[in-house]
Amino acid sequence: MARKDFAFPVGLPADNPAWGSWSTKIKSGTYDPTVTIVSNVDSAFATECQYMRVINTVTVSGSVSIDATAAGTTQVRLTLPTQATLVIAANLAGTGVSVTSQIPAVIYGDTATSTALFEYSGTGITDVFYFQFTYQVF
Image (cartoon, rainbow, N blue to C red; front, side, top):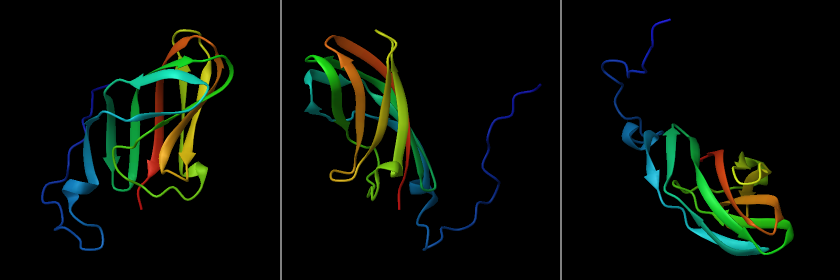
């Protein structure tokens, strides 16, 4: 099967005041998320992450290294590339997996800070996770 690349239609409609500019609604890039320790973490850092925004949906992927203090619930927060107001935790959702110990992580919205809350059951070692999450910008 031949590869089909996405192409914008010729003559996109003029910017719509209700939506804003096309250049702000369809874009992609990289960013360096700020990592904030929440619980059971000695240190944590993220590599440069990538994101893609299509209209109001933003998808993020990347890697984060977390040194858990001890076994138990381990949490860090990651900032978002495009600001959003997260009303409920499910407004942002995703998963990650440790390449170090093959344990899963859940990622959901922190409504108090409008950031991504990264949570897993730490084992007291440093784990490197690859992750992806999606959220809506309203």
